[in-house]
Length: 415
Image (cartoon, rainbow, N blue to C red; front, side, top):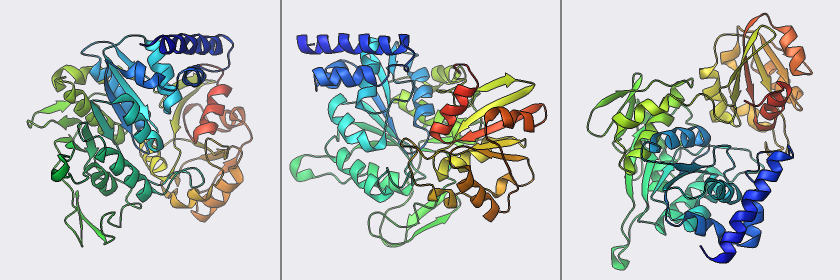
């Protein structure tokens, strides 16, 4: 690297270490931020010489990145932003901290994908899904698909692993080539894990006509856009690879959605030459992802933490949660988005019949929503109050981002 980049990388590592030592965080943002101030091209310099995979989407990025890192680890050391700092400062910090590694797997915020593609020149990009997110922070989903599509037009040599079940992702992943200028469409490998959330993909992003669905299939009624034939498919408790071989996937993470994340990880690893039979056993070593899915025993209760930040992820969280007392926590701070109207896009009916408790800065917003959905609930002011309100046994906790972090802090341990 140039001398300036070497200095910036060293300062980045030092700043991150000081942040951790001072108890001000894990250093996964501040180190990269300072490094990029010294050398704005530091991310590009740190990426040079590595085979890189980028993982982006509205939901599942952190878990898929962790699973993919485990799978690619068959080949050698892998740099990754395992704490979920998914903007360029986080990528820079992660690569600087890792030192020289042949591989890197980076989670990328969907808004930054074009910028990170430009800086890192990855070997493969995984596109998971696109659904509505915080309304006051995120772009409208069709606009996000347009930005992805435009980015891939400029990087047609990158290999793409994309979700065949999401019409917006399929459209974004298949920009037309330009033979006159020697530009070919990107090479795409499709995976399928099923898509439960359909409310953002009823209108074709190409022509504006209606998207029709029948079973697993979907198609546009006005143009040729339709579901491609997937190469990797979740089937029963395992994954079918492109050869037709079935691989049992034994995860310590709950829910069918994580089988889909595992299928994506296997597909990305295969782009690096990793055989599924070699990678699949490594997926089972992942037990908790930045606190997500962690289980903690306290005061006779087995507490499981689930993060849910938008309507699609709340739907998946209800699927993962056991029929047990459930604490819901909602904040509306800057990382969450200040607008809580998205609560009305979530169907809370699956919670009927179980003990439901609510807490958080915006618990009253949640209370109104649950009342509309005829879900009885009890308001508690603190996590300790919640523990006292439920009998010994399992307690499911579902919270959005800062509420999740608050509860982790109340548990008084690093998960």
